[in-house]
Length: 120
Image (cartoon, rainbow, N blue to C red):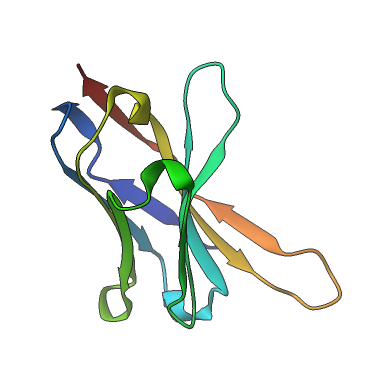
């Protein structure tokens, strides 16, 4: 069973920075895609950033130019560097990993979430 453990959330003032980490129980190169999602109170969970096993990255428009997703294969860890944080970035951030299984639906694994709160 895959376990994903997030860390690095917290309280920060607007304009500040945080770095989230997601460490997997095993090699992360096996995942086709890894990503960060967030869910604010009363809102649906949304994709923030993703990275493929080939290293291609994608970002939500709201975070482009401010957030950077990366990974360290040797540490089985994915990161989300968040700069110039805004109050609207406040949410629970979730780590996700996805395995494409071919004919069957992809398999998703989720971390427990880490709270990010940005004060104005």
